Structures are given as structure tokens and as C-alpha cells.
Image 1 (cartoon, one colour):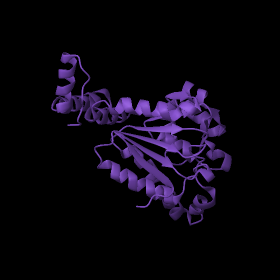
Image 2 (cartoon, rainbow, N blue to C red):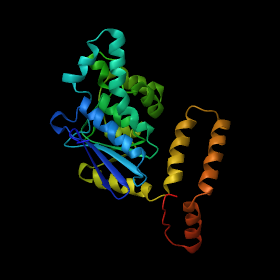
Image 3 (cartoon, one colour):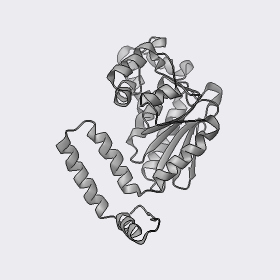
Image 4 (cartoon, rainbow, N blue to C red):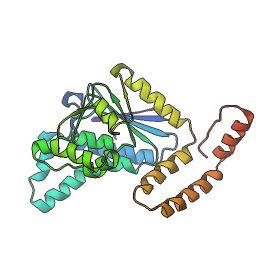
Length: 262
């Protein structure tokens, strides 16, 4: 597929996907949705990429859905309009299906569906100039793109209620304080910091990294015994890998390990 509304590149073990509509502050489009879905499908089979960074070209991460085009999906009769909305949002949330860690690198406007898209990533790194908002209510809408699922799991129910019911922006430092982002850095340091952060993850063995991601998300909806069952399975799986043998050998030999993902 010829990419237009997103860009994608590989840097060693890191994939970098960027929303590429800076003239609209990377407002989400149908073409962007389709291109993202295609890249996610490719990444499912790409064992060379160990971490995915998602960011935006220009001065903002994402200003939400493109009002000029996406609001048309509600013009059909209610049953069809509901299916339209589901079909529009679902491919954007497909990044949660990836078994590799994902990091949203955000800046400037990160609002509405754009914030939901960032929350669908496993971690978020924000520039100090970032403004974040669950702005749906300001246009008379209930949140979409899994926002009411993702936000309470990051910041708690009461704070999620506040952010959704007010629809008012918060800055990066407040987002850090409430646990919505992992790190806040100056704009000129944003990508260097994020690549270093992603690289440190990518340099760890990829099999346990994928299992850790699955274990953490499964643990949100299971009891402790179910979690122990999966963790036991995951540890046995790791114990059979060459990477675990390499980790132990490197520790004994006091040298840096070299992981091959097997």
C-alpha cells in the first residue's frame, strides 16, 4: 500500500509510525485508518521490530477526528450509524492487538479521538507543550474509540469522570501527575528521549517482553489465581528460550547479553 496519511520507518529494532496530516494537526481520516490497519497487519508478522513508536508530523500529535468527513458517519439511520462509528474506530484500536510494546510520543494538540488513540498505546511520552483533552462533550458527543474503557484504567474512575464531563484541557505536567503519561520532556528532546527509551526496551529479550505485555493486560480482568496460572506458563516459555540461556551466561561472564529473539 502506498502511504499518504501516515509514514512508517524502521530504525534497528524500532518501528516509527507517524500521522502525516500536519496541515490539519493530524486529524484522523478514513485513509489514515486504512493505512494504519495495513501497517499493524504487517507488524504482526515482523519479528525484527520489537517496539513501535507512534507520533505525529508537525507541531501536534492529533487534533481528533476530522469533523469535515467523520461526522458524516452519523447521518445514516441509527442502527447503520452505530455500525459506521464502530467500523471507523475499530482499526485505530487495533494497535492494542500488537504483541510488541507501543509508545505514543505526543506533543501539541492531543485531544478527543487523538487522545484515545494515544491511550490505546501501552505507554505515553509527552512534550512540555502538550495539551490533552477528552473534548467529546464540547461537541455534544459521548467519547468514542474506547476512551471510556481506556481512561479509567489509567487515571481511575473519578478522574476519568472529571476529564470526560468537563472536556477541558490539561497540560503535560498534570497528565504526568495523574498517570496519564509516563514521562514529560522538552520539545527539542522529545524524539531523542523517546528513541532511547524505546531502544532500552528493544534491547531486552523480546519473548518475555511480549509475554509481560499480555500478562499485565490479562491481569486487569482476572483474579490472582488466573494471573498466577498465566505467569507460570509464561515463565516456562521463557525458560525454554536461547535468550534466557544467554542472559544467565552473560550474567555469569559479566558481559552485556546479546538477544536474538529465540
